[in-house]
Length: 190
Image 1: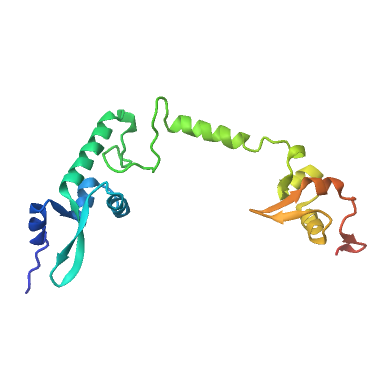
Image 2: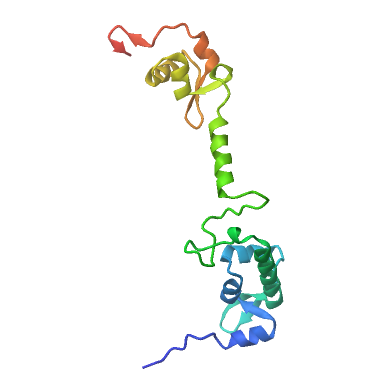
């Protein structure tokens, strides 16, 4: 039976003596994702170089000094954060934050952000319907008292101007100038 050794390959020691780390080691030390590491290397935040390997594709390795520097920066930032802002894994332990959003600044927390967003959502449509140029189908139905199906039929017949942009939008002006004749035949909807 062949026994496999799952320890680090011998070239890892040679790379570390040159001041380089393999990608999995750099990722583990920094606690970041592969895309972040690649981006940092592309903007020269962390030095990297391709290292040839006999009989294999060249491997990108990363500067030990730069990885250690970024670790120190990360630790310094964590030390400056108040305990309530420390990321947790949901069970109260250390780990990745539950959300990708980091709140910074005095008095900022999830509660104040939630309050702000609720207020913003409540007031984002505060423009009165009689001042809007284009009304959503729902707004046009409320404004005119007509059913949404009737408004769509009026737009198909050309009696009111409508565009489809993230849902149907009806021109308020064309709705106001509409003659009032419904797009119906004597037997019902055409």
